[in-house]
Amino acid sequence: MKIRKAVFPVAGLGTRVLPATKAMPKEMLTIVDKPLIQYVVDEAKEAGIEHFIFVTGRNKGVIEDHFDRMYELDATLAARGKQAEIEILARDQSEAGAMSFTRQQAPLGLGHAVWCARDIVGDEPFAVVLPDELVLNAPGCLAQMIEAANKLGEKSNLIAVEEVPAHLTHQYGICGVGKRHGSTMFEVDGMVEKPPKGTAPSNLSITGRYILQSEIFRILETQERGAGGEIQLTDAMIGLARTQRFYGVEFEGERHDCGSKAGFLRANIAFGMARADLRDGLRAEMQHYLERK
Ligand code: UTP
Image 1 (cartoon, rainbow, N blue to C red):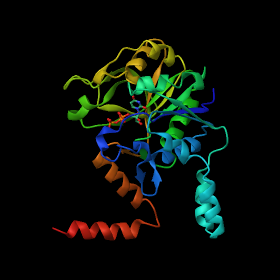
Image 2: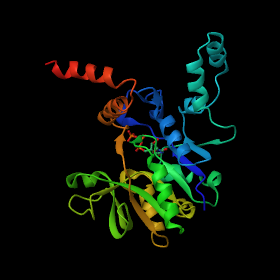
Image 3: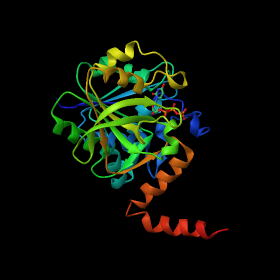
Image 4: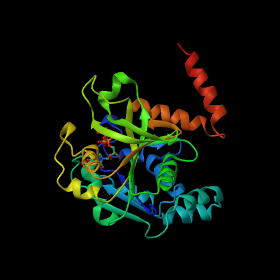
């Protein structure tokens, strides 16, 4: 069944990057010249997603505005003959009716945020994309996952996984590795959210791209709070794995955790260096600072 819908949970408080996120949503933080949320919507579009579902909260209205038309801006740019800028705005404009916004009234956790999208998703498989994780690659991470799902051709769930250093596994959701399917995919053999040190089944962490079957909503409905007192998506996936298969996808590309200060800075450098129009200037600037004592 075609994966047509993607859920973007954007209701978190972004406490790791305060004070930037006091009045501004974390998902509007800018990498080079685009907000995080625009990157992940573009990634989903490229993967063939047709409907974009945002789970928002208080203080997040500007995300909705970002995807709307700005008539004053359009008119001013047109009057000044700023064609290149008009084209940038037109490129990012979503189709009417292709975006839905629902609210998570309190940040009870990622699992709860996904559950808030249940009625808009309905009874079909869907993607979940976390906007604070960017993957620098073409084709994008979600396109790679949808291709993997199509190859499987069976009703299943997929999670994007990435190796993390063994001594840091207690900070992540980790999955065990079962039967391998080709060089980049394997059957998931158990998942655990933030395993105590020395108990992780592997060093493969669950990252921010998922393809899930709609049965996850029934499990989320009664999911108890887990690690950090939050309703965890991983815990609900563990429940679903009792009756449905999960696959891990080792995607190609460099993942950036833009929800931490160091990761955000690194992503700006990586995405800046990937831009032909900015690379040389950025390299010269960095050289200057590296040489400074
Ligand atoms: P994070 O845990 O990275 O985001 O959740 P956070 O809670 O905003 O960040 P910190 O830890 O306080 O700095 C990953 C994604 O899930 C969303 C966040 O907005 C983010 O995009 N999220 C998280 C929700 O929508 N609701 C929640 O209750 C929790």
